[in-house]
Length: 169
Image (cartoon, rainbow, N blue to C red; front, side, top):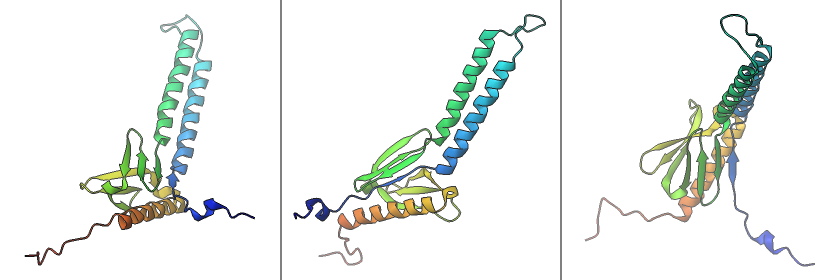
């Protein structure tokens, strides 16, 4: 029998996470909003008596507004984080960042934090909304994975430090 050559090659570690509880809540809210606007649209009286006249066009418009509002609510469930040995990709609600590990100084997730953050080398801090405290152990495991990827990068690309107290010469 021939040995499998691919087993000698270390597989690259990847970390991917989404806020599961948030996505469930957002989906439920969007569904509830769509159901409410559908009921309002269907129960809207179709008459021309009185001050305001509602017709089928108004019913379609209310349903359309419900679709738009439900879609807007679903955007809140957009956060995601993906990381590998090359870097980390953070997608928050409105923005996304693709960062190489060289730009990341630390992965922070404190006990009082609602979500994890990346401390960048330039002093900025980037919120990682995909890693929320409400997701419990899933978030802790993802943060540990990010920290191990960062530590591996830092170990592989360590620069020797100068002794600043006693410069040569």
